[in-house]
Length: 180
Image 1 (tube, one colour):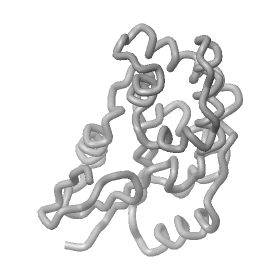
Image 2 (cartoon, helix red, strand yellow; image 1 turned 30 degrees about the horizontal axis):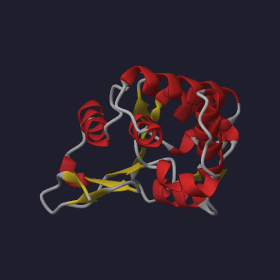
Image 3 (cartoon, rainbow, N blue to C red; image 1 turned 90 degrees about the vertical axis):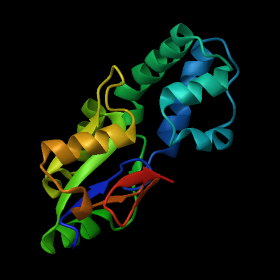
């Protein structure tokens, strides 16, 4: 069966988020009294969940400290970082061509939904998606597999007809998604 829907990740797939993410991490670490690494040393923090990145950076499993770091990160993110990213070249044209070809398109990001929608609107891409899906601020649906399952159920999509673009997922022949 051919694919009927395409799920797109946001950071690192549609947009280059490195500048904003690294600056927000540096800000949070500084506010907590740590000397933050250079931005080049934080590139690895773009994909994992914030709690995992901060756990490694702060060398702690203490959820109170990690949540404080995430709160500081989000303070800067909500006001500044949200727009410290850029679209990769040709993204609007590619999305338009995919839509013209008849595919349904959905944004599937671990980023909180509230921020994902603002970024998509900022880049004037809203009309190119049938739906925008992200996590909740409390971490619900921040695991990509859970988010994808939620999209499949909500949109009544058959797993065998869906492809994920970006992120660490590959489509298996049986239609199930698994992390690489």
